Length: 128
Image 1 (cartoon, rainbow, N blue to C red):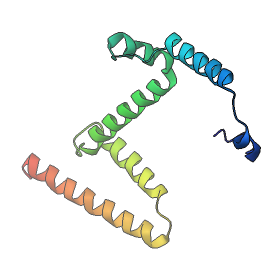
Image 2: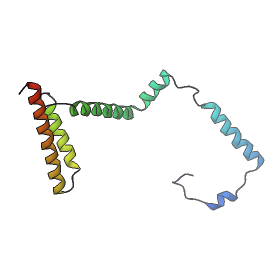
Image 3: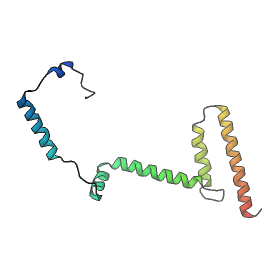
C-alpha cells in the first residue's frame, strides 16, 4: 500500500467487471513483456549498474580505502612514518566517544600504557 495515499475502506468493496479485469491483466502482461527481468548478471550489467549508481559506488570505494588506511595505520610502530598519524587520529576519534571524565582518564592511561609497550618493543628491536 502506498504510504502517501490515505486508506479508503470503500476501495475494497469496488469490484471490477470481467472486461475491466481482462484489460488490467492485458496491461500488466504487456508491461512485463516490455521490461523483462534479466536472466543473468554479467560484466556488462555490472558496468551498467556502476554507471547508474556512481555516488553509491564512490561511497563504497571511500569506505574501502578508509578501512584499508586505518588497518595500515593500526599496525604502525614507533619507527613507522604512519605512527604519528596513528596516535593523533586514533586518540582523537576514540576520544569522541568518551562521555565522562573518568572515561577520559582511563583512555589516557590506556594510551600511555600502549606507548610504553611500543617504546619497550622499539628498544628491544634496536638492541637496547
